[in-house]
Length: 153
Image (cartoon, rainbow, N blue to C red; front, side, top):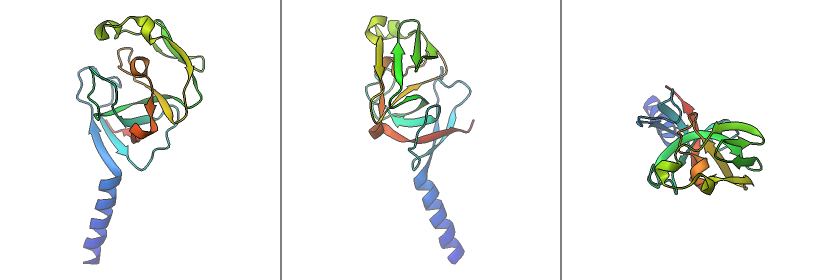
């Protein structure tokens, strides 16, 4: 009986702490990754980490509340510059162009920005130029963060 209780307690802890997520999109923004382990207790996100968050303001690609995994390319205090040729963070090129402007039916000039990431916010990207990411909808805020993600496959 004690072993059964221990097993149930461990299973409950793991089940509450971790989520398994998958990316079933045809064009993935993280092309070699499609299954993720999300640690809901680890919200200590650093530049370069994979971050899982709830979508907000991401129509028409994602519904509000949908779980998204991207790379936290920028964190509070980093300098962002977006133009039609590239996006840089602290002067380092992160991703090229704005190829989704036509699909969004908005001019590239509408997405141009030169600013500092505010407190409690992240700038997220994918690994492909066609990633629908912060270039188009802005920041992910702390209240959206589910936790740190780890690519399994």
